[in-house]
Length: 503
Image (tube, rainbow, N blue to C red; front, side):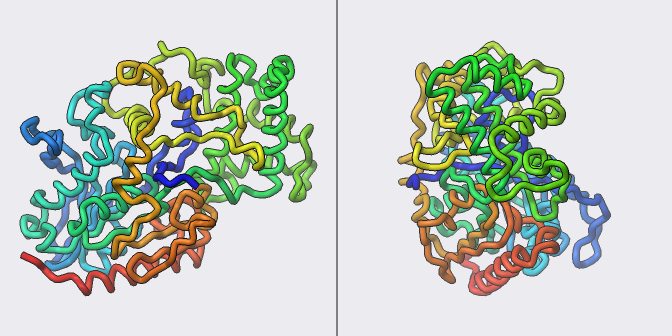
């Protein structure tokens, strides 16, 4: 297991994103919420939860003289009473529009505020959405997109913001307890912030905070047939069977893809759909369609070993041709859509703001090294061994030629040293993970890590997927997820009972 935190995001295949690393990028699941009228506990009408507020955030926490930028946030205080906690979350690597529901009791954030009479805030991460220190995403501007700057943003907001609610100028840490919540990358950021800046946030809740890239819990018959196809591709690549590889590409409708490594990366798209599953997702989910295409033949489901290579190639290829290609690429040809060697494409050159892929790529290339690659020869593979770190590192140069003259090596050792990684032992930090999370092996619940579950730093697991227990509706359909939610609420109640003002 790697000893550094490598950030893993849930996601689905997105159209016209020509590289595998970022097709796996996706921040927290969004929730639709009815825009009903809300009132405070004393009956006062509240602004809509979609109301956008702005905070004067420092451009550079190491040089206050550079001034400030407008950082967006959203807030709901319908359950607030003086003395209650302030619950803060950033959705992380994406535009924060559409995450307003995380201020309501449809999420664990809102359940905490309801139970503890607190207020909930969603704040947009720097360089994502429209919270940008500069009006572009050039390498020069993105130099200020670092883990430390993101941590300092959260701390500076908590310690200086005057919140737009009654008494909102007197609820800073020390005056009121603050709780930091996050999921996936922002779950890791929660842990990092509490390690790096202890004493600001009284308690934390990290959902699927991720540390290493390993996948599990794919249906066995489905994974068996995926393994068979991937092994077939890798074997042909090992003996330079270019004709056989071309035939396989054409079976998938991907004959136009020039480089075999891009074809291998394209096959990962179906696995990214797996990441987006939740307990309340029905059988119509695109990942289940994919597995059914491979495993159901003449109305009969395959056994644990699948139907075998020939059927897997035909069925997986047919699924791409009839259903999936349009989902991923639309009207674009395969090379334009999935190729990564034409650096003149707008995907690589577009530096306008609100481009989450570019901003996240910057963090990947510089600090966290999140690469989805094939496993060692001794392990079964659902991702082709053709995919190695050099594939993604080359794309860092594609995206940021001004910053990288050669493929970069992210500063992962420094990341781990600064923020404790798997060694985190900060008090009052609750970890929630899912047994069916494809990235469970990247969390503090990883097999072999054996991190103890303590009352000071609890680790709870439900039978959910990635960040499952953040959403109340998932606890309704799965009692194990509900148990994790109830444990989180219990610990928050206990920890908040211990808080005393210091000013």
